[in-house]
Image (tube, rainbow, N blue to C red; front, side, top):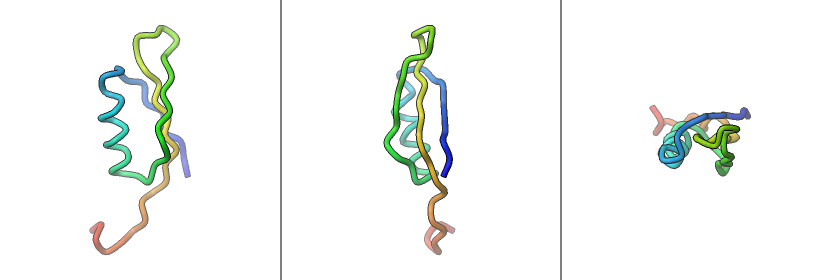
Length: 56
């Protein structure tokens, strides 16, 4: 298991969360403002998706 941190525009946070959830087995995203308040820090706990024949 590992943690992913992305700093992005607020408008992109949902799209990025969904994209990462498609690539990894993720927990719920956590969002916090950056220090300057202009962007969002997005944190997700992730793990590799199980390898199945369907994933090939």
